Amino acid sequence: MPIEMIIGFLVVLLALFIGARYGSLALGAISGIGLAILVFGFGLKPGTPPTDVIYIIVAAVTCAGMLQASGGMDWMIQIAEKMLRRHPDRITFLAPLVTFFLTVLCGTGHVVYTIMPIICDIALKKGIRPERPCGIASISSQIGITCSPIAAAVVAFMTISNANGYEITIPQILLVSIPASLFGITMASIWSYHRGLDLDKDPQFQAKLKDPAQYNYIYGSSATTLDKKISKEAKISVYIFLIALGLIVIFAVFPSLLPLYTNSEGLSTRLKMNLVIQIVMLSAAALMVICAKANPKLAVSGAVWQSGMVAVVAIFGIAWMADTYFEAYTENIKVIMSGLVESYPWSIAFVFFFVSVLINSQGAVVVSMLPLAYSMGIDGVVLLGVFPSVYGYFFIPNYPSDIATVNFDRSGTTVIGKYLFNHSFMIPGLINVITATIVASILAQIFHGLGWV
Picture (tube, rainbow, N blue to C red):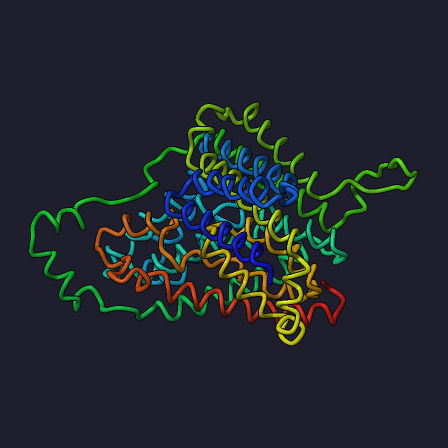
């Protein structure tokens, strides 16, 4: 192994480590320093920025931001809250399903910040330890990214796979990822159902209740969206959003509906799905402004749009740096990993998981690592099976949704442990990802045998 390859790898890891410590925009920006060192210091040829994925994120986040600005997201959260409050005793099973499907619909896990305090409030009022539903609900909100037709990770998987000879559509990806993820959520919810002590038997919690100030903090307020008045325009924005999602799925299932174009060589090609998603999402965002009175200024100041733009910068910097490094040393990496990959191709799941722990972005993992996996000769069906393993950033509890969940839990049962790794998200996350990856691998092989994927 060339010494410059080792040093270059350390540069990449150091950039990711420092960027993760600063968080937010710093992760992508500091990756730019790593890229500069590789290009100007080591003389590596710059890789290709993942522009297709970035454009899709921008379009999808703009649409979701307009949905939030118009009040449509409040209506969706309100509908979810009504269901949860109707069945409070099942909160540990229903809460993760709610956060999962919110992410599937919106393409980002950052839509769950409003529902998290409500989940905690319902659990407290029912006497259920909030850690039980909150821990798995936070995990499920991120697992949903691999199951959303407009999420960067899903679109990137399709785009990169097609470019490497594995023809697959978004519905085919979801055919595997959705049932596998739901199975993983179910297993993690079953484990969470009896985790920790019941509140009436928890000495630490009972000690807090003896302090009047603490008692008032825990039980003195109620988180709800049911008192919000939902406007007609808010409902219209949701209908526009759902129609847009439906169109994307229809075009993906029936590509013959897409227009044909003649290229410079005289060959006919259909409009690509990455462009379809961008066109439909931007059009939907515009219709929300025109028909649902969505305020663009509110959209860009909202949590969904801002977090989405942070993801754009992260993917831009990380994926560009990673592509530059791996493109330069692909042959060396093939030699190093050839034996393991040939005998156990599914072991690439550990690589995906480890990289996700470092870079906190499933889309960035797919964009930076999937081309490398294909270059090593791993079959597309195997990669589809290990797709859920691109979520590993719960391992170190520094992701915004996990930190926010800890803060929302007024009981103090959802925690980041004294030793960092003994936190409330570790076991549900591992159960979820491991189970989903195993089930997805089985489903991918079965569906491939049937000719479905």
